Length: 283
Image 1 (cartoon, rainbow, N blue to C red):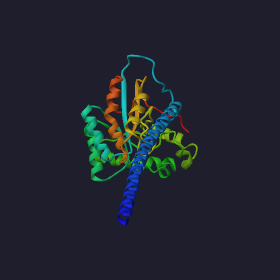
Image 2 (image 1 turned 60 degrees about the vertical axis):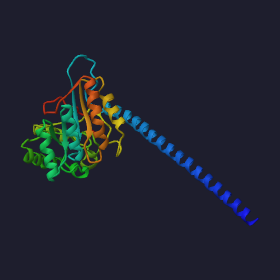
Image 3 (image 1 turned 135 degrees about the vertical axis):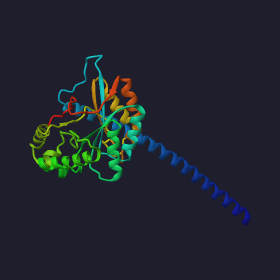
Image 4 (image 1 turned 45 degrees about the vertical axis):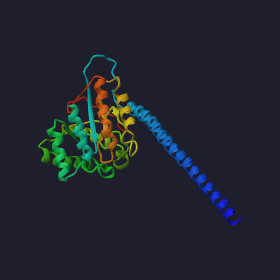
């Protein structure tokens, strides 16, 4: 009788364990399904944010509505902010493969690797623009002099490294960033744009945004879709992307972006001081 009880207990234990295992398996499957659904919702939410951001930026641009005139040359200006980094090197490899040119709005770094990348950008026919030495908003937007000193410091570094003196720049955050007002007062943005032009330079905002800086890591399809939708119907697309160390999905998106823009009839050029700029309305 004792052996029979032990056998029954053992069967019950096994049954309970099997039941628990089955429950755990189902629970794990449910968790995975919920995780996948959450990721899809995040992407959908990001896409909605992209639509909203594109609408806001379009409203801020001065005279930059999509052209309705057909059969005009179409130029795409791929621009990458916040490098150089290892992502810059991968981007240069892709650009070389597709025979496409781009403009890199760099920040200051005096490592040998960064200097190698500054040189490679120029040697391979791309352009370098200034994006401030430090990219620290509270420092560069304290005053007109603080902003220009950061640009001069970076310009000297690039010129000493490459032999080329950049004459184009991009405001960190764009020319309409509210940080100019927060740290330097209501008139700082206006005084900076005038100073830049007095010194024979040009600044560039953008009219197409890849949205790769809307959160730390944006999915590749969202970036591709944002660029291709934003470029549709234009004859000039100044495309904002980033090559900071964390922007791995930007690198992954680049081939599809280039192929998609080519399919829309674009050719790729570098920004120059006399290129028609995209300018936001100042804060």
